[in-house]
Length: 122
Image (cartoon, rainbow, N blue to C red; front, side):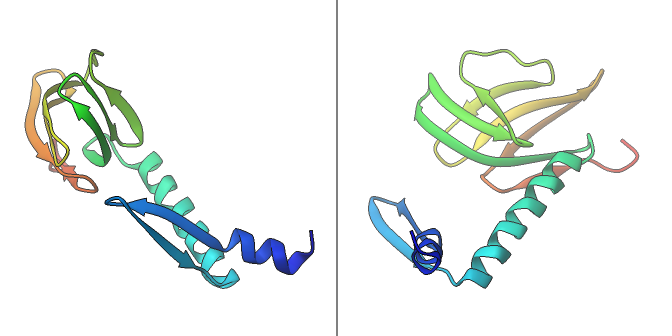
C-alpha cells in the first residue's frame, strides 16, 4: 500500500455517538498532536496522587450490569473493592464511598471526566 494511502486511512477517524455516525478527518499533524495528548492524559492518570479520583467513563446496561473506570481502572457490578463501595450507578453518574485510608470515608458523586480531590493534608 502506498504511503499516501496509509496516511489517509490512518488519519480518518470514525466513531458513533448517540446513534449517528460522526466522521472526522485529521491531518497528519493533528493526528500526531492527538496521539501525544492521549499519551499525556494517560501518564497524568497513572501519576495522580492517592488523594485524587478521576471518573473516566461509564458503560451502563442496567443496575446489575455496568462498568466504570476510576483512575484508569475498571470497576464492575458484582465485584468487591477494598477502597470503594459503589452505592449507585446510572448512565450519567456514579455515587460511591471512597476509602483512601483507614477511618477516612468520602461519599461522592462523579460524572464522567470529573475529578474529586481531597485536601493535600488529608
